[in-house]
Image (cartoon, rainbow, N blue to C red; front, top):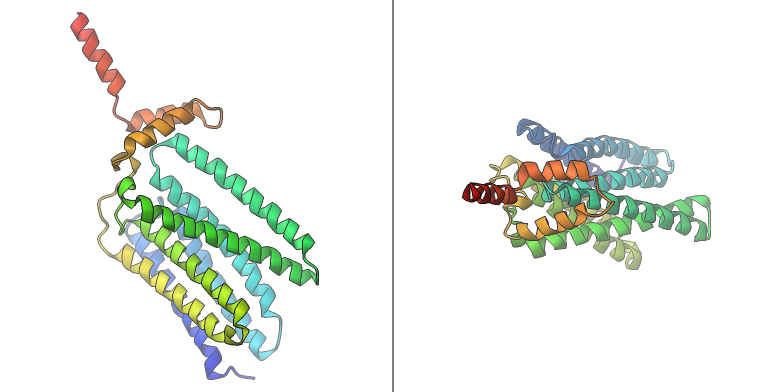
Length: 283
């Protein structure tokens, strides 16, 4: 049995997205940004490999009739886990060099991951039906929660772009915009699929096309000349970040030794300068 011309459309879109992600990997490697975006680099590698696996499973399911749904949900769950780490990476890169804030973010992301796991487990046990139905319900819950978090990350950058002092062409912002846009499209398409089941095929094509556009956006952003690299130290609200960081240093939730060393290496030694001036006056 061969695929009909209509069934080759999602295959072509998925393959094109994989090629675009290979281009993103090449650009990251060429600009020597791999060390700063390790999780995003790994995410793109995994997405390319999973795309090849999904295409093979899709063609097999259309020709032989095997269950492609299980493969799709498994790959989707793995990709969501990687997207979660990418979100943490964006947050950590944005608030550098305030290591106390990074430690707080790490703790919050761990708790969120735990709650998502607990919610998925409870959903699986509470869902009535076959085992496959329970697994799909659990993965769907995690997926929608992740999509909402990504939308929140996009909204954060939209609202606080000036306060954070970041350019829209910077890698952190472009990655966040891509994830947020992908999440928004995913939530809208999921809603439409539930209410317009007859249009599932067309909505699937739209989903693949939107992801291709987002990957193309990443490729263009990494291909363009990179703006001046900025961190939270360069933003207009750096004093707010500094106060938060100093307050967190007094809590038991952060590694004080590492935090103090990191902060001293980046923050201007205002107090030390004042002490030196006062000492000279006293002499």
